[in-house]
Length: 233
Image 1 (cartoon, rainbow, N blue to C red):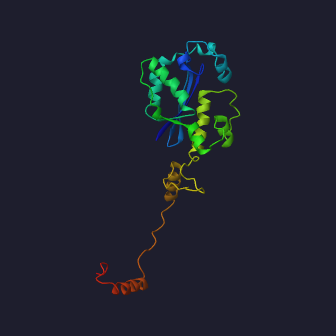
Image 2 (cartoon, one colour):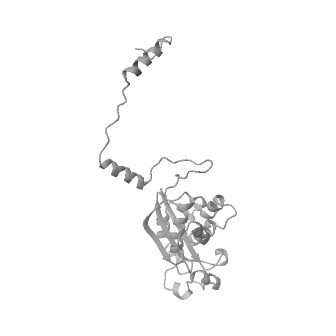
Image 3 (cartoon, rainbow, N blue to C red):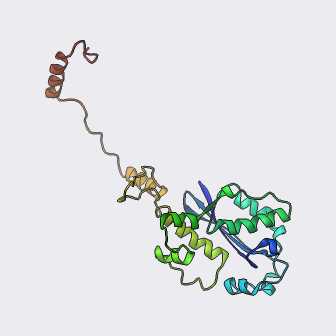
């Protein structure tokens, strides 16, 4: 199962007001495990940076002027995302900007059904609690001390850790101890490796399962009490 943890930075809050994407960070997960495959791009918005946005991510107009506009990266981004589930914190915001940019350069928009919103996931799991990325990092004891400014790649890396905790830690489905809790018997890749290693050390001989003479006699006596039992040969 391939998933992409995604985050963006922008010049402001609303693409319809002329604001643009300036950074995108994507991190690939396979079966909930980071593969090391990433896509990280700075994007020239071809406009001035909003002062409020600059305070959040620190990306200046001058810095971004050295990079290519979104239209030069559209196909690369679509190819990396493909049809994978997109793990996004406050998905409606990022998807709104992505689709505005895709449509502006003649590319098809991404369906909202492709996105999994970790804000909504956190609110369902912890109703009434703070669900910002920083708050969730504190809840799960994920070190984010280096996050002095927002950054798309850094935030996607933190979000990947938060997401794994939200779905039950690094072994999702193995949560127990709560009402309605269940055990997922499907093994993780790590478990499979451990089982394979144990098997490599030697296979135990099968235990005998044949019935004892006493058990056979008791079974025969029981069959005598039945009328035409199908088990009697």
